[in-house]
Length: 295
Image (tube, rainbow, N blue to C red; front, side, top):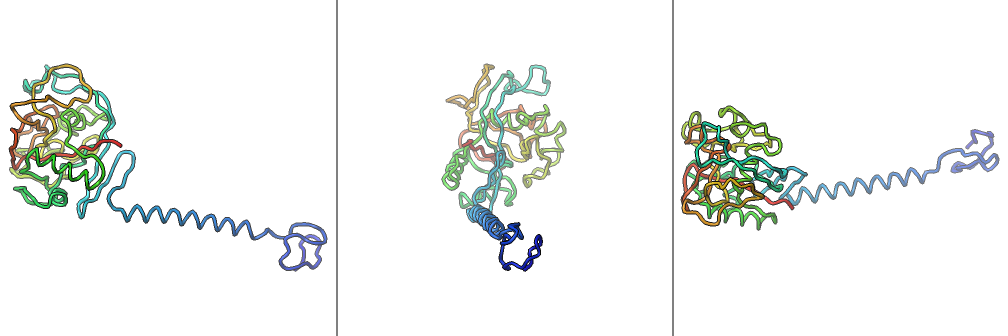
């Protein structure tokens, strides 16, 4: 091989010319080292991807958690904590006395189900389907409050996360759009047909979830379709400001339900409207939505 500088013959594998001392070519080891480092990085990435895919139970980012239970999957969306005015204004002519007085509530962050709990998910966790309107993508119905709590407990055992029913305050904050709220009458719109299945357009039956447009937080069917049971016992509001309220300790009425349903007119689907379900009662218009604690 000829040195490009002094034109003398040198060894083929020489890096420096033995006569003029000039570098004649780059040594191979930096390139080899770079290739080795790149291969190690690629291997590490592949291992992480394979482990993530093979676990199959949970994929997570800061604001969404995707879970898979058998052939059923569901998404939990994060609701950042904040303060809001809960209940109806004294000047809201459509509101009822039991929606008042409006009062300030402050909540910590939590996760809420993107949709109502579907029949597919219920069957995967509980092993049976109690619903009247049988379809995998319909909200589960004909379940009691105690059965919903049992479902949450079993789901928590399967996933290792703490699932529960939403408190009434968490439900209303999420329905209003949380900190992204635009002040809509219904959850996600001032027009019921955009976001809900109510008596006006439901044909008096339940419908698949995720068919209408979502609200500001990406939540579907917060109003209409199936009524949603909350964890709270039912009582009139005191009007006092509250922090993470859990509801009263006793109630002769039963448990709070929210959101209206397919058998009710639009007025029952307003974000402030509230009612109750007697203890132990099941109905074909009654379902629920999951809450999950932040880690």
